[in-house]
Length: 508
Image (cartoon, rainbow, N blue to C red; front, top):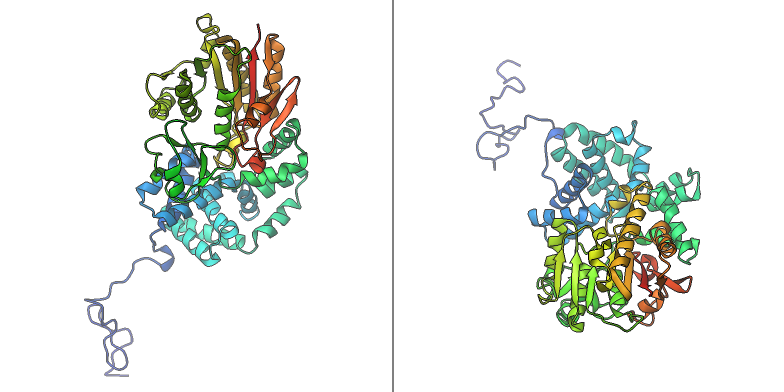
């Protein structure tokens, strides 16, 4: 062995050679550089779309933010193209909607309560689970990219845990997990809660709402499924101010529920002609129906129809539509919103409506119950604060933030606002009471209690008023209550948020 170089006896600053004497790594300039960390500790840059989705979940769970407000800002900040923006949106919204289902799975795979996990780890696990079980992402890509994201954003140690847990998640398909978890449910509502990722109390409340509004309880699964579908973007052209021709040329399709509306499926809606100018607005078709029904219903006494009030106007969608119609009628709209920043949103929404036909006030809506406002208005919209159970598809995190204890406080406020509106409406005028919730306590029971308190109040045929503004083929939404009727729209039937409406009048 003498005279031979010992194995491994080369110096670090000399190039290595193979058995043929050729220099290895000849394309490398200078001595080869070696990583000082193990392969598992080296950080890869996170995929931008997944990074945006992760940051949205962190804001939602860590700062009580709203995904629909955070996500657009993140997309702009990271300059995602259309494809990546769509992927980030589906990933973030899908993980939030499916949180209950994914947490039920993860709870069987982690050796501690999920509440004891670092919230960032839990968010990464939810993102990985959604890719593995609900998106057309190859399993290896879902695993590798989620682990890389975790390593870059959380650390090498946690990424190992995430890798191990997600590999166990990937061992079964979504339907297998559903069957396993639902099979252990102790009640029908718990089974539906797991399968459709809704809190158990919301499942029970929605089933009760279907029955209360004249539907069959068997529709509950279709309703829950509709809550988990991404809603279409609905557009409305403000009457007399905007038109949808440019939107239709840009790829929008005519709405199926009522006139002057459209749906837009692809691309940045801000680029649709009229949207930046405010004459074409993004607004759920159900909200459009409510505003048009209130504006169109005939006043019982055919009296003056000049002064209108939107009592709870923020953020301003219904106010803008009412304001445009008010211009056509030579009426004047007062849009009231007690919160300053939301009042500014209302003013921005109304900016496309000719000034002089509207004003924005910042008062507690209950103040309109005072003598100074008695009988001042001909038409009043009361779009009351509510639980939002009718818009769960639109706000994916909201179902996990609500609790049954919220309902009594909300219904008390709804009743007080309705009483204030009744003071402010003139004899023969009309009130549109609206909530974005089908919960029986926030809808028909509020109306029934109101009618008991006010003997000179009457419920009009709200179903007929809505029928007058929607297309003839629209499924019926009215349900009798005494001599009048209320209206409840449904996402699984009408393709709208679950909006409720009752049109009331004041008798002499």
